[in-house]
Length: 163
Image 1: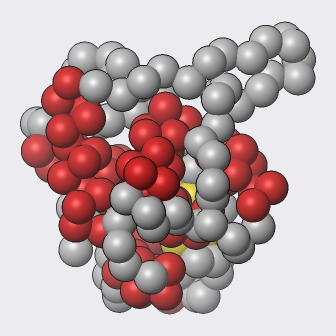
Image 2 (image 1 turned 180 degrees about the vertical axis):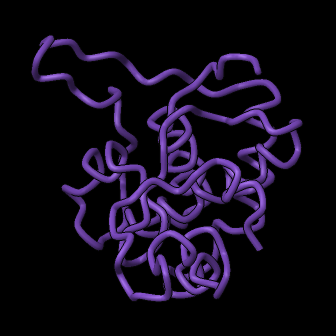
């Protein structure tokens, strides 16, 4: 499989900028769900290749990329009015990598996903990721026990086959 050109932070900034330019800024919760659908749609449409290599974890309100969550957590539950300029800051190296602008087939795929999901309220997006038997549900509620898989990684194969 080819190495992805972008990381989740790049794609998240792309989504945030699309939302702002459409006059409908998203919250961190909405961003996480749209980011999840962008990854899922890309995997399905590109022979199993991922849009970005970062993993999603099964959190209470759905799939989350922790580094992206941290980057936008300063907004709380409010709309995000500015995209991050840097990828996750590495405190051990003291290095800040700038966000890469998404383009090409990746941008086309993200834009298509945004058109489908970008205008839905947070609760509807959460509901869409919480379907019984879906990727999030099978990890978060492992073995039928609610929350037993909290913060466990959602496998790429599960994302690809999500309902």
